[in-house]
Image (cartoon, rainbow, N blue to C red; front, top):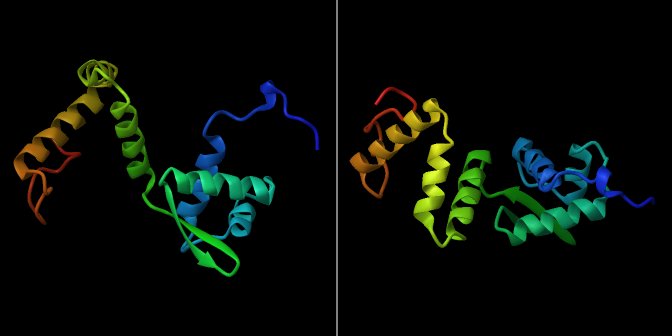
Length: 142
């Protein structure tokens, strides 16, 4: 096997994203071999197993015994994982206010309006979230 030069390396997180996409598309837990197959066999099974183990260590997937190995399932959908990553990055900041201010300053007008609507909905419903059938539509007008 030839070595991969830095110019040939995949962007950080690309393999994890591919593996998660395969798990999200599946109708149930997948073994590393099934994930490898879902990805078209372009990765070695050991690579897939390593990625799945790392995702498990990060809390992004769960695993259960399946024969002598494990079968893996995503813990959250794509939006939930993005929210978790955003929260994790925010938790690393000493100055949360500055980090949030810079995030908000980079939002499009549409995203800013959506965020305002979501925050208003959260205020109206409290920490438990909206009751069934109540509260504003988060993608509708405020």
